[in-house]
Image 1 (cartoon, rainbow, N blue to C red):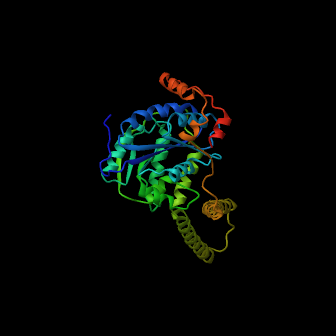
Image 2: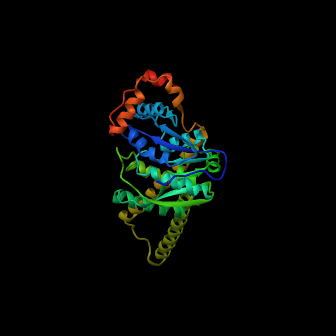
Image 3: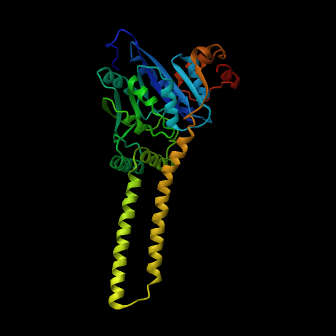
Length: 358
């Protein structure tokens, strides 16, 4: 792997890598092992790895704490509960201090080996470097098609276009991060917020790999709600569409009333059919319920934003120096040995050691 050196400033620059974790205990050491060669290829840069535990219920936190003992580059943020990936990313962005910040998932579908290329493009003048999935064959057919339909629909109705097949894997300059931190939304659709702030953007293509371990936490109903969140966060077009639907319905109703009036004058009064009457009532009743639900989506967003609750709550932070004072004897040696053997079985970390490091 080619090495990368900082050449634009005598001051040693810092790269922050943000990694959200939720029930990824089996993949912590695998991710650390994959990231090792990448860090070795980025010379003359300081690197901090901010791992955000988003309320995991397995041994993810214990494994992350063990890594923080092993390497001072790791900084662990433990959220008080599961706030969702968007909140976890926000927590990482708020804590990152690097000149450039890289967001990446822990499942290794986004290759860490691409980071040194992202940094190289950034050093050549880009403020944002997107990693675009050129090949998504590892995703199921339905997931690929639904993602394609979502991007098309969103980019038609929203003022801000989202690049297709681009996830959260990207590099952002410090100026971009500071702009994102100024956005006050509680209900956050990060892909849209990344695009909204703008800045000079470059794109790198890569082939998406299968998950290293575990299963996706986004599927089915969650993806549907996520799509609605994305559209309602950046567009009022759905509301405007229902205004047009109401206008057209009123015009058709007036036209039909005129036809009935003229027919009555010419041919007299006829007994109307109850079947057609019921169809009309049910049709317009359904339209009313759909439009009411759509309006409710926007009112719900106003309600949530008006309460001004924090996006996330941090329970604890863990860093290498503090953890070293409470580390169990031999923990680091055992972890190095396990990584060398490719062993991903649970590592025993006592709860009192975790609390003592807070």
